[in-house]
Image 1 (cartoon, helix red, strand yellow):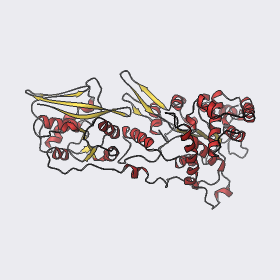
Image 2 (tube, rainbow, N blue to C red):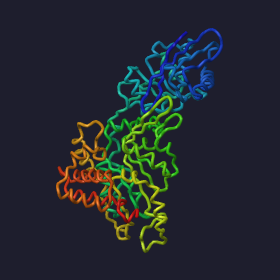
Image 3 (cartoon, rainbow, N blue to C red):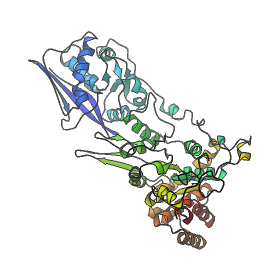
Image 4 (cartoon, rainbow, N blue to C red):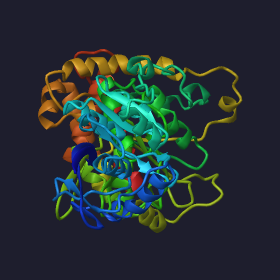
Length: 511
């Protein structure tokens, strides 16, 4: 008897429906074809034990299973449940007339229980697109898949629940989630708040500008000045995610298997990889590509603490994704693209000892040591960072001040107002939503300067020996400062403030 059941494979952040054809005939043997990997080939042992422990049996006949399309490589243990239901129906042990109306996925334990899978959300989206009635998957993944409206999503704990459902014995209810309620939950109670930060008003201003325009920022200062503390609080002042952004971000975390029983992600991600990270772990890849840290930070913040401690080749692989806002990983037989539109926040000490030209510091570094330390960061990478700011230690008077600083919620209101101006400005453009994403054409159009501003920028360019890319960065930051002031045009005061935020271009730093 031949039966068809349906599973799904995830490539990049998109799913492809897999047809599992099970044929049981005279003879003996178990033949699994359609480019399965080792995890799928081993499934026969898990299936046999799970069936025996639940009162069913592996048919003692010739079982041929084809996973179509046969030229597409399948990987992972998530097809266990698909294969098991196919075998049970094809061997006549259970009756399931409408089994072809459902996507069935899950990894089996030997007792018939189910283990979580990766990529439940993209699979559910594809199932809805292709007109499937429902989706069976492990209970741990049910919240992420239930985000998709118009699809019956069933979270199951063991194989018996699926069997009972198809035989009409059980009362399995689909999981329903109010996506909007989930989305707006806990938005005004950030874990890390700017009101905890004493002093550092100029740095907070920088953070506000960076958040308003989506600009990359680097913080330079001695140990204990508050660089990490400030960076951790940046997501709390970023505008709330739109439903589209939340769905994109949740999709990537679902593919990476990092959701852990949550539905729609409503908080912007904050990723802080250790400086020993490899370039594959940072940008994604592997023999079977998985999203890297830059994609996990999509629509959020990627924080690189102690930037010069990262291996130079690791930092260099970020250059293209920073410009393109996506990363394409090519293999011999296929290519996957992961989105990576993130805000880069980096921090570093000004020298190996941590102190720079400070007469009171306990130790200093020689010019040669400093040059070697700073040369780990290439000029092209620094050019892609819009804002460079020096962080100085907070004096005792500010630290001991009992007055409460401005909260993240208040700062976020100003940031959101500036972002709304940008959304309106770029509403006709498909891939541009805020100032940091502008290309040269948009900069010429939206950052037109008067004569005074042009002269000021010309002087700065000549004195600081800035590159053409740095020139564009200054104009983008100036446009954001103007948006925070709700000013229709960029004026000289906006340009002057933006020029201040190019510390690493000055002679004193890298000379």
